[in-house]
Image 1 (spheres, rainbow, N blue to C red):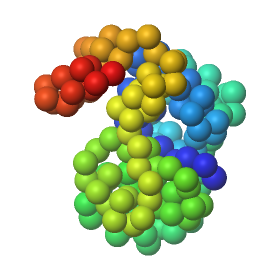
Image 2 (cartoon, rainbow, N blue to C red):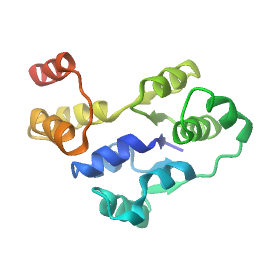
Image 3 (cartoon, rainbow, N blue to C red):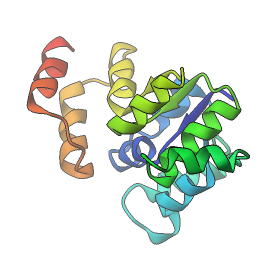
Length: 161
């Protein structure tokens, strides 16, 4: 299993119409059932059409979490989607776990998972020539998706790329 994602990276990339960067970088992305629920693809919200297309196209797949006790332990500090994503990544020895939330990233790293996030995916896409302007995409991410990027980090990303 190459990659497991939580809700935020998928939803945010879909809202700014760059969801396919996940497919380009990882080929297949697995999500646990709770992430599918959190994506609310049947509600016609921004980004849900491309998410539904990715699921129908088979490159976003739902994977069942077997270790429910681990999920319960992780739920002490994380929401359901993050807990299941980390558990699924551990169970299947995922190469990458895609998470944006600080607590989820911290816990995943403490469990020796490799972590990437939305900004890392965008940065890699820019460096691979898939994005003409990182600034434009970061501005869209902030405005359309309501994604928080601190001013200092934003300036660093724009200046360095």
